[in-house]
Figure (cartoon, rainbow, N blue to C red):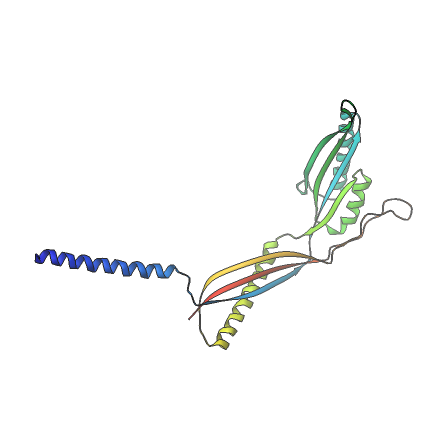
Length: 239
């Protein structure tokens, strides 16, 4: 065999072997280490809600659709004006639904005998001291369908971040104790998973009832507290 050809074959084989080893090395770095263990930590933050969300509805029924729409609009505007008089800003009032449904009388031929207008909107109350007054006032001003309140908080991310820090700290401390007890060293963190939730506590809406003189009573609303909880799982490489 020609010497130059033989040298070329040897060099080619060397380069091929080198490429294979390089590929195997790089590929091995992308594989999750087999010797791993996972630990979980939990972080909690107890917060007091600062926003109450309620859904206010108006249901009107009548035979003349034009008159019914006029009547419903007057009631709607009256409720909206009442809410604004209580310091509720326009940005905190949003329409959720407006529907018109015909009422039928069935015989040989179906006949429309009236209409039902169903209109609802959501309201955010930021002054929680006014919840009871707003609920009873909305009814007195024409609302006849109310859901809520549902309590929430502004800047939830702040409390989530605090809960996450606690959860990670707890998980790391637990991992260090396990590694010390088991006699191995911690490697790098190779995976992190997280789950979170906002849990309500001690919320007691009393409802809207009749007062002693037969009028509309002001409901007693307790905001209670809410728990923000985060569960973090850290997966470590074992050295």
